[in-house]
Structure formats: structure tokens, C-alpha cells
Length: 311
Ligand code: PMV
Image 1: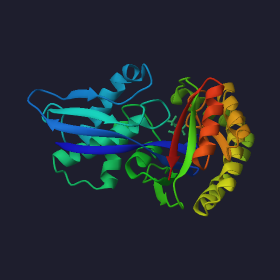
Image 2: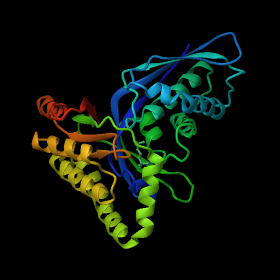
Image 3: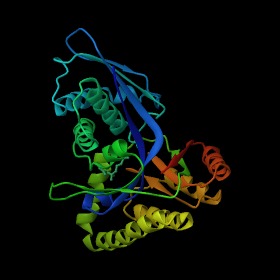
Image 4: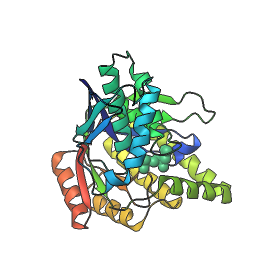
């Protein structure tokens, strides 16, 4: 039997701006997806998906998941028909939009195949395979999700717009810190929202250029404040980043409500995370008691809150 894992992630800085070559910072979550691969008789794989999930998620993603599994096998130099296995996904990462659940499962499968078939892949190769798997879910992923899923920790990521190798650096921080992730319960299409931002950029290049310039400063600052473990500084930059994301129209009233409620409850900073117009927000809440206060404030507004850690 081969086994593997992949981490969930949250984007702390740089969603949308990463598409245009700006730096982004993501952190793996402590929750993981695990994968077991066992050889069986038959013509193809058998899938047992035991991951906890948002209702409807697995059904909605079923076809994309099948495409992704084929891609992972192919990229690993295997075929689903030539190498029949039982694939069992599990772990404590709740499969939902915005936490990198798809990338986590691709990384976990790539690792499990590597283990079972003694393929000798290093993390760099596992990451490339997980990226191919991600393409089964959405055509042109920036690569940040699979990178966080494979390496864990904090990641500084810059997409190479010429198609060459992306820049990826692991950032070290003092110690893990509590966060709360608020779930709006609304699903949005990454493809659609990214498309709308592109229209905005093309329609008003001056305004977009000003916003990108300001974001660039935030990203560099965020890197330094994180490494200096200046959490109040990081929180302020998250707040500023949320305002820029509002300006490019990717927030919505539910996300703004959770962001406001988190700040009122004492969060050091809060912003939307991922695609936006639904999906998730993240609040920086060092310490168990602040984390609980903020989570309760989000729940009091009628949303779900996940208590977890980054770093
Ligand atoms: O919604 P998520 O967590 O998959 O994040 C999407 C992030 C974008 O920057 C909007 C798109 C991308 O490919 O990086």
C-alpha cells in the first residue's frame, strides 16, 4: 500500500494580483487530505472518497475529479487502466471551495502513487504532477495552490508570465499562529471573476495600475512583517489588501460583513481570501481565546467559521 498527503491552503496576500505577475503569499493549513493507494485486480481504479465535505461538493466536482486523477496518473508515467488501484481519500481537510481541497488531493495522490510504485520522485516533481492534476479542476491555475499543498508552510509565489519556472520560496515564521476562516456559503466561479477583473484592468488601465502599484508595496511589506513576526503589522496590511480587493470589485456584502465582524471582535486584520464574490475570508487571531471570540462573531452573523493555524 502507498500513502500520501497534501495540505489545504489559504491565500494571505495576492489573490487576483498573482495572475498579473505580482507576488503572493499563501500558507498551508494544518488540515490535510490523505490518500491510500492499494493495487487491485480490474480494468481501472476504484475511488473511495472519505473526505469530510461541504454538502454537494463531491457531486459537483465528480467529473473534474475524474479528469484530475487521469492527469495525475499520466504525469506520473502510469495509466489508470494499466495500473488498477483502489484510491482512498481521507484526512481532516473539509473539501470546500477556496481551501485548496483539489490541490491537496492531487498532491496526496501523487505522493501515494510515488510510494506504491517506487517512482523516486522528489517534491519538485510531485508539485509538477499535482499542477497537472489541478488542470482537471480549472484550466489555467496559477500554481499557488499545488505548491502550498506539496510544501506546506508559508510560501512566497510569483507566477512566471513568460511560461518559464515560477518563483517559489518557503518563508519561515516564528511559530504557528491562529486564524479564523469564515465561509460565506456562496460558490463563485474563479474563471468568471478572474475574467471580470481582466475587463476592469483593460477598461481602466490607469486605475488598475495604481492599485497594482500599491499592492506591490503591500506584498513586500507583508513578507518582512511576517518574517519579523510583527502580527499587528501583518493584520494592518491584510486590512489594506481587503480595501484594494473591494476596489477591483471582487468582494461582496457577505464577505464585508464577516470582515467587519472579525475586526470588531478584535482580529488583528481580516480580508477575503481566494476568488471572492462568495467563498471565504480570513482573520488573523493570535491566541486561542481571540480565535474563539472572532469565530463566534462570524457565527453570530449566520456564517460558518473554521478555527485553524498557519505557519
Ligand atoms: O479561490 P481559490 O482559492 O482557488 O483562489 C483563486 C486565486 C486567484 O488568484 C483568483 C486565481 C489564481 O489562479 O491564482
